[in-house]
Length: 301
Image (cartoon, rainbow, N blue to C red; front, top):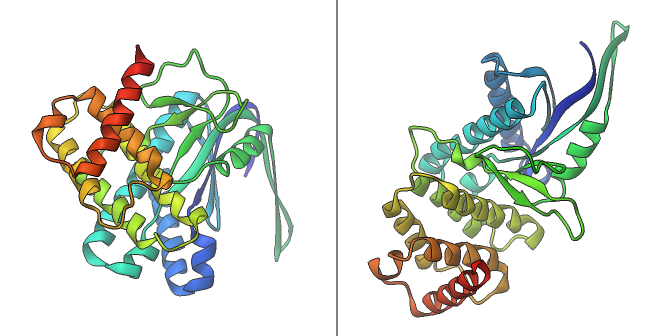
């Protein structure tokens, strides 16, 4: 396998939480890794448009694309398919079994060069040489965020794509783009289903270190951000989702940890004002949401 590209779009993708799981439960970690490889094998066998090369090793995946639109659409499809596989786990497992069997990806895409060359040294040894600016940037970029998120790195002000939303990775950073992969839907699951899975994991991981639990809080944030970007959103589903969050007893809404979710709720109420009177929220959550929604309205004026 040899490849030399002076300009291509390289995605670096890996599994969230696999290293910790290997230490806790090697058999389940092996099952999860095998499932990831099955997803990749199925994805590549369908010959997605624009895919030039794929390399999978352990819990990581490199996808090389010939154009940016193919990279965004293809990676979004893979993320959505892997995420929706959690539906079967949610229906069959509970507690730690679901916690450790669930499968989430994180990744980034970057434009740049890539060289890939395989060399057979002997019957028992094969060397693989991989280097490229696109790969280096995407591997570094995906480590900067928490959660099942997919980033398009670099400034793309002229790129018009309905899955993209601006995101700043750190102060003074160039504006990159968040790829709203949850907008890719399957016919099997609703938005409410997807929300339940990740809300359940937020509860199961609530006693883990914050560096771990934030993966699931930020995936919850991404799902809600994506809902706000939908063109034909079913407001009844949105009502169910807000009610699920409202009734989750493990969530301390006065803890700043949940601020990103509250800001999403505030933006939701601002965008869909009829939600305010359609059902009752608890008093504390109502006060916080209305305060943040008022601030959001002021900022948008």
